[in-house]
Length: 247
Image (cartoon, rainbow, N blue to C red; front, side, top):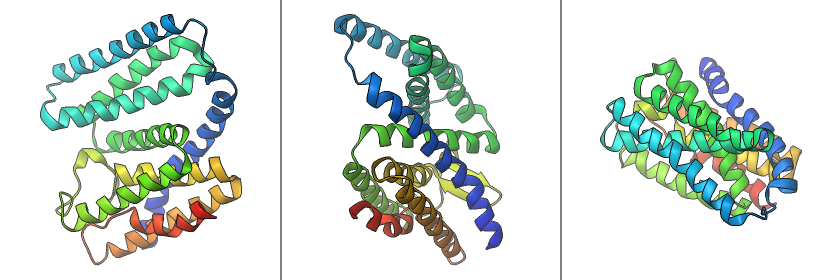
């Protein structure tokens, strides 16, 4: 059990801390600068469409070159686009429109890792993806929406693990893995999102308490793995942090 606790810490805590730190930086910048609509609205919209179409088109071409097909191609592209958009959002205040170049490279690298990477590189990708998705969600939605999203995913998590598509294991491309311990990407996102969102809206103390409770819930879930091959990872952490959303 001690080894599992260490493994969980290696997988979860860095993504949580990175998400909280980046949200602090971006919220300070966005709340004071980037919510202002520029005067050249039409030109900005045109450039926005162009800068969006270029990486999206390149990603489809790249996916075809790597011979990724079907549902796996869709999942790969969607995950990679989240990383690409996040890189753009993070770098935009500091590099301006040049951030789309880094965003495109990040998108291509994500597709490559998911198509050709080994287990370590895919685990690293899941960590980066979790940080990216948690930042975008925390900055885009109010706290009540985060609670609704978390609750809906927790309910789906219960169904998927006990009765649905995850009852026979997790798709390898969608998990972070250290040793025999595997955590689904959805759980990883919300392990970072819950403390980050509470930290953003309710302050440092509540955020740190949420971080501790999420990890405690993850450890309890890992303990239950002694009795089952697969356990839903989100319901217990969400249940433990639920009072923090309503105080």
